[in-house]
Image (spheres, rainbow, N blue to C red):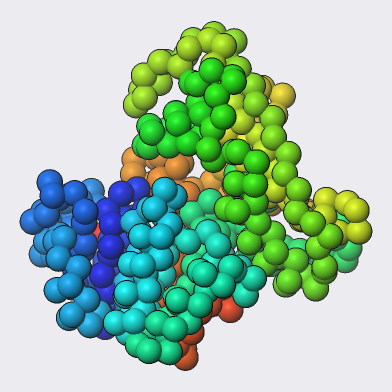
Length: 359
């Protein structure tokens, strides 16, 4: 069994605890938290499992890493603390652990990552013998391995489009929804997540990753952005009211341009209510989905709907992205120490888990 810790117990961390507990080759040995109110609580309670796992949360990073865990699922946020997240991850890799995480956007395409991100990781790998694999929660598989797999089913490929389409009223992160993305803010408010160059910083690595796999050279990466106001005030169950005239929907694209044309596109369409921007792409049931469209011959369209935590689509998206990471741990343990990306790490069947009792 691979001794595995989960570092962070937010939306991603909860799913990570469940995924580690369900994996027949992994053993959850510790859970690290930042919130003092979570210290001492059982991991099963924090993950919403409804039963105890016998692993209590701690904030003692030194003690946990001193125990030399073989793997770390780093689920703490890197959105507003990228330097701290990098330092934590480097520390774990230097301790000899295989680390999987969605928290460092710049390392989605690790070969083209900035030296200030890549070099500390490589130094830690050389010193401690650990490894690092970074993939997204947007989700990573929807912007790399899935579109690449589907592209191989056609005879010609003109455009690859990856879409995330969501109703953000189901997303359990009010601060991110209101302030990072700008839902419910005046239309002259500039949301940090969609400010110029930020979408490329977050999703550009996945565009470059797909271009590398397809053997094409990018001219450039472009961004597009559209925003729509709410026509009327709407109320949500988890986040309260969003006033008429404030931002109610956002649509942006990160486009990989090949010979002057957008050929590899990652598109996000998010709303706070289905009534806003009804002419934009919508998920089949109005809640949320990920979609890959291959324009070519034949035209191929695949829509993935995932749900978790009582039917929540946002939680389902997190769970599938976490599954990609956690299910790579045993492969990474057997591989040579190193810095890996989605083109290196295979997407494998759920060996040993068919019919296995859910945690």
